[in-house]
Image 1 (tube, rainbow, N blue to C red):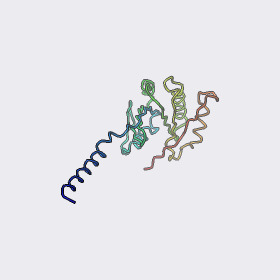
Image 2: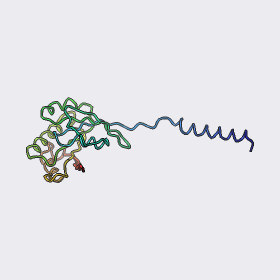
Image 3: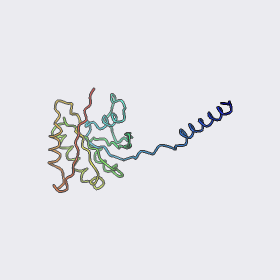
Image 4: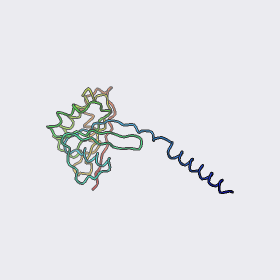
Length: 182
């Protein structure tokens, strides 16, 4: 084979490689969903989101006000608005609900009866809010690794018992636990 033929073959291969690498266009965009994450102070919202974003959770500080994190998954990106859970901040939660496509409610499964009651009341309010009442809710029973933690089944019974929905309107609210291993 002559040198000219070899050069032409390499040029053609270069052209094919260039087309394969550069002319495909950008990969298709992953869909993005806007979620709101609520729960009382200390329920573990910030730790959960830090873990989902592969951030260090060693120096996690409770959110005062709000924080927005993009949580990447293979097929989608969740833009999560985490709202601080202090009683002085909870009254402003509804100002951040607009545009949400789903709700993550985090509760501390090892909390006191009073805090569990407060969390239930906040969940009740969120379920009835006009901007959230039609959205999917994910209720996370966090701190399952603590000795005083109630089982997911106990929390599920408690949440279902007080849901402000009639039986025919009751939806399935998945409850999962988030274990934090140190």
